Length: 185
Length: 216
Ligand SMILES: [Zn+2]
Image 1 (cartoon, chains in turn cyan, yellow):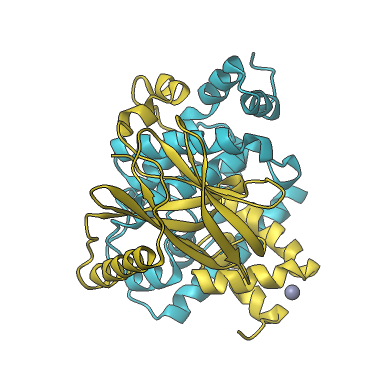
Image 2: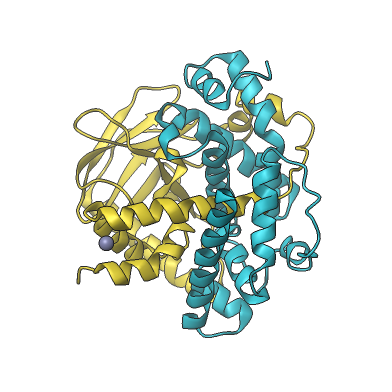
């Protein structure tokens, strides 16, 4: 079973093949739930978000376009959107997300201990993030992972809106440059 | 609306690909990249990086029974004993009433940070899980008011607004016209039983987006 590609499992799920759907959920549930939990910070809501993410993936499986990225990336983006939809309404803008402290206080100089589906990609990302300034790293994590707008980042960091936008922009463009360089080596 | 040029758009692209640009600016960017291959290529490049940020979240073991619940759609049953469907009572006056309720809700939210309990907002979700808009659902005693807003990534044109319950036939509630990526519609449905989606249906029969209505 482990040799079946992600794309094949997704196609099977689109065709309502129960075995494929089971294998698909089995393969991705820890990653999906982990991302949902990081964003919403609480088990019960995270489970709802993760369930919703799989429901959306199931519903849109036939529309997946492999030319636009991997199944895992597609599913994680769906998960992020589902999780953010659930917390956006009740989020207190002036406070950081509950799980953010752990990321913020991480030792960026050390190797990540992450054990996940895309460990190699994660390690490269970690190395690139380590080279950003603290402010840039916080800005891109708040926006990219938690869905904080520039206005919310500005409020949280007590900085002008323009500064928040610049931090987000600079951080993402620098990350892009570093990940592309890494990929070429 | 002033059309954005490439340098304007490039400034906005990082926030755009991170999914944190507000509705209006987002629609402006969508309109631009629709006709600009160079900016579209840049979107693809930056999106890869934005996607990578999601790898920061550590894996976590879901609660026991999670997999079974996903596969059995137990989730829906748990939340959905009594959602309702449809007999279109849709009157212009009624639609206006809903919109005013929604407006009150928005004002109230801005002031106190809490929403009026009778209104629930659910995302309108398009291909790939992109949120293209939202539906405000107003729960009255014998009917349900629906106010739909679309502001992102939907092709211009007229779409039928279709209520698609799981257990009863689909019903066309009205039509919404999307121009410059935006559109709005409001109407009323009488209550019935079971889970239901609100779908936009193109002339071709394609369903580019849908919302899962809250169940009570
Ligand atoms: Zn351009």
